[in-house]
Amino acid sequence: MAAPGHRKLATDAWESLLRTQVAMMRELNKEPLIKELGSREYDVLFNLSRCPSGWLRLNELNDHVLLTQPSISRMVDRLEARGLVRRKSAEDDKRGVLIGLTETGAQLQKTVGRAHVQRIMELMDAGLTDAEMRMLQQLTGKMRAGITREH
Image (cartoon, rainbow, N blue to C red; front, side, top):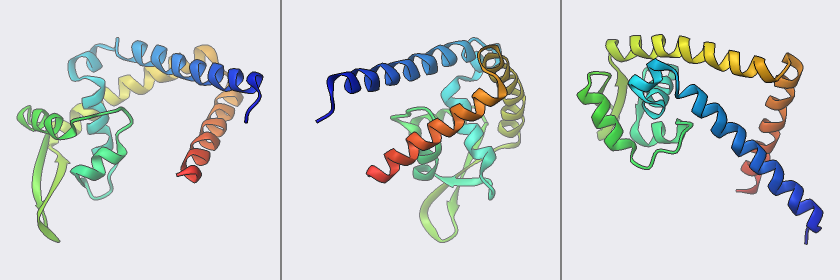
């Protein structure tokens, strides 16, 4: 059983991490282009843009998004209706559906992405040095690895 001081440290550290993430997301969501698209929608477009083949199955897309998305299927429907993504049948499984960016979706992702990255850089630079950012990256990577080992 963990000592009470250790439990408090763990919960305080978690709360600090969570509050920082929330503060960052609030600031990032103020970006006019993100307001137009929405951070969850951008997350979908971003992940599709990073896919080497340009296509992902719906369940693969759900595994890659950074933000919690309880109904990725409905979101993809909305993005498709806006002409930002398209669907096609998987060649290896005709019942499977692949999701990919349209040209309009790819262009919007690039435009929003540039503004998003610029704002991330401004927020990170305001609080951390390059060495601290590297340390943060190492610490969060170590934490994710520990979580992955546990499951």
